[in-house]
Image 1: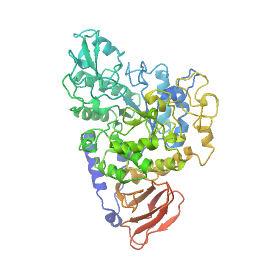
Image 2: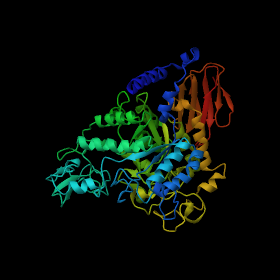
Image 3: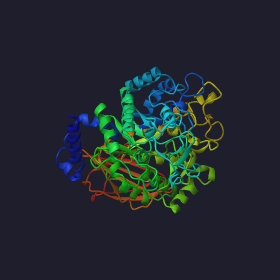
Image 4: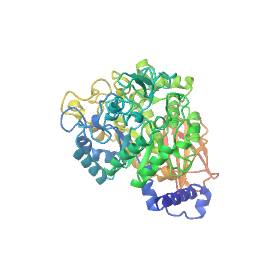
Length: 578
């Protein structure tokens, strides 16, 4: 029955998305079934990425916890958050900030109890906020009981849960996730007497996903957390999760087993029909189709890393040509699928798909110092100190909320938190949340916190914090909250058919959305200088453009054309008056 509903839903979406804008003015559009909209909630949601251990400490031990994040749910609701994405919160040796899991079924005792988690889930649901979590099953910690048993004997039932080789594979030092820091992907284990495979650090042995028993265990983990109320999984490192790895495989040219995603999708949908998979897959647009599935049978949504990299190129150079191409290149996805767009996440800004020349331009503008760069491909900085100019920061958020997809923001970015480049690798952007100009930024009552709080310079908690910005109508926090509210008033962005418009300026990005007889036009100037913008539309004579920010109106020319000037780093959201 559920499969039938999905097929009917896809057919309905296809028929709606193929509607010609001109025809929609003649024939009243059919109303959208409310159950489709509820089950495809990710089309228009706002996701907030948060790490519990650095968000709010409720008991004064210096570590954030579930009681702490529960206390801040009203704040997240006010920002406009509709879904929380939790970083790993299970027991861990914490050698990779929780991504080295040693027990997939429990709560890290530093973060609270099962009861604390259940109360957090109950309170989030009460506020209409969905909760997603990281699913990190491409590897385990080397302290996980499975690996401890696997290394003891070849006869262990867990031996085949990991990938082994008696001899060191030829390409033992190729395909590292962390080049420049990581030295190999095969490490000899003295106890096991063999080499084990690890795409990440050598404390994170990869699970053998070709083993049906491992796949069953992954589904068991998913079922456990669905039963506790989780409504989505951000699937970590999808290409590595599904790669077919053995002693002879080429890590630079891996083969993938996509039916693992298909089966996981089916399993999740069967247990909770509106739960989703959000994939972390930094792939070329030519490779994206099997990750979504031709008919949407795999990932419901994925992070658009390709567009993100070209967005930062546009922000660095003021040129939109490559961003326009990136958006067009990633446009063709199934009707039930959605891209997740973001500015910053918990990792470095990955620029690996830019050319060397393009990457150097972004480095020069946003990460000129060697300690700002990471893994020979990215920048390990927060958005605010990187962009610097408040006008450019405001523009970037306006672009984020106006792109065709689901916006995702990282905790602290809504107030413009800074980074701590004294911390190693990715930890530079994972400092505690800054709540107030109070001891320890209001994060904790103890001086010794899980990670240093930014207390010096222009991004010190005394200058950048939630309490101060709440009372300032011109603050970044209030700007982001206004954009979140505005986005909710614009379902065309998440549901509609979109097209890029020729603006007449290489610095201006213009997008038009059409849905259910409604139209939007979003215009952004990536230049610090004013730009004249000329747009040709197919809108009928006499129609007006309503500025959604200040409700001012502009009449199109008799030919349906738009002409106007944007301020430096200016943006306008227009609704075409029906």
